[in-house]
Every structure is written in C-alpha cells, then in structure tokens.
Image (tube, rainbow, N blue to C red):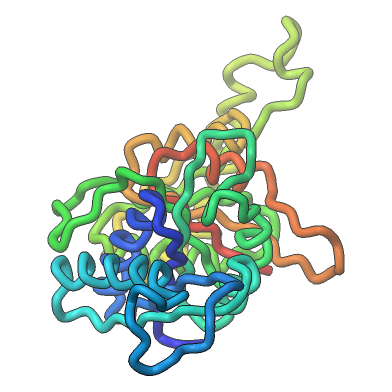
Length: 289
C-alpha cells in the first residue's frame, strides 16, 4: 500500500470538490495526493505531440487544472498525476488497493446509485479494499479549517469486530481536532409500540444496556486516543436514520461495511447505503471484518 490519498477525477463539479477535500486530508495525514483520471480511449503517449492533435489533451487538462487549483491551496503538498487507459471502475478498484484512502465525487440524494463519472455504480464502494470517501459539490475545504467546525460521527452496530472502523474514526477525529460522536441506533420491536407494551422504564433499561455495551467497545480506543473527546449516543430508532440525523451538522460521517469473502454480488448494508445517499457531509465507508 502506498502512502497516498487517491481521488478520481472526471471534470465534474463533484470530482473537483472531492479533489479539494482529498488534498486537505492528504495534507493532514502528510501523504501524497494522487490525481487519477481513467479513460479506456487514452492513446499511447507521444513525445512532442501538439495539443491540437493530442488525443489525450482533454484528459490531461482535467488533471492539470485540478493540480493547479490544489497547488494554490496547498503549495507544499506532494501531488502525483495518473492517467490510466482503463475503465473507471477497474482503475479505481485497483487504486484502492494501493491507497490509504480513495476519494470520489458524489451526487447523492437520488435513488440511482450514481457517483464518479455519473454511471459508475456503488460497486466501487462495496468492493474497495480500503476506506472510500464520498464528497458532494459544495463541501467546504480550506487550508486552515475553523477549529471545532463540527464533530466526526461514527455509526457503530455492536455486531462483531469493528476495530478498523473505530481506528479510522478516532484517527480522523484527532486529525480534525474534533469531538467524536459515536452513535448506535436500535429499532424497537413491533410489540413495543402497542398500547400494552412496556413503558418508559423498559426503554430506559434497554438504552442503559446498549450504552454499557457501547462503552465496552469504545473504552480501549478512548485510552489509545486520550486527546479525543467522545460523545456516545444511543438512539431508539432505525440505525440508518440515527446516523444520518446525527451527521446533519457534522464535519465527517464514518460508517463501516463488512468485507465480503464469498463470490456474491457486492452490496452495501442499509446504513451505509442511506449514509452514502442522504448524509449532507462527506462520508467515509470503511471495510472491516
């Protein structure tokens, strides 16, 4: 794995926003920023080809324009340009195996799973080996972000190991100098809503039990990242709604997905899918066992 943050570029407003956000993350993490543009029709490079007959002119322009913009914002950030003669999905999946973080522009807020290059499906997010960030156009990015601009929110399921997810979330909170808001959503069973169901005391008991389990999961990470202020929250509502609402004013939302070890069609869970489409802040989806 290379010490890079890779961003996929296609010339859209979303991919340019993703590049600015990726540059900020690379600067925080002291990594190289890789600007990746993939197009199957890229021609072999010829030395001294005039721009008016260069078949790769527009592909180069997409990358060079973003490079210039990033250099103005982060003059000391190392940047690598990467033009790949391949379809976007294959190139991005390959890049994910060699990057600390893969960043894509996201249109979001739609029922169609449309992200980088418009028609590239969320297969990239569901299959990537490393964390993938989805960034919308209009996302704030500046060389000196305001201190305490917002929390980093992490959704925790409490089912199975999620160390990779928590490591990324705590590290992100430390790098962003932001509090970490750990959220667990739990839908109550149907019988809880009937008139003869248990009252508020039972709900308080359920909440207290979940909060105790949440604290057990968080404790070793609190100790490791002692400088990060952690706010834990148990919401008796659907997990998807809980994390999306918690992230409404957040700087970053971090969600996990289980790695798939069987040859099945890749898919995202309900929570990751809802976050990718409806969260208003950048979303990082972290694969974990």
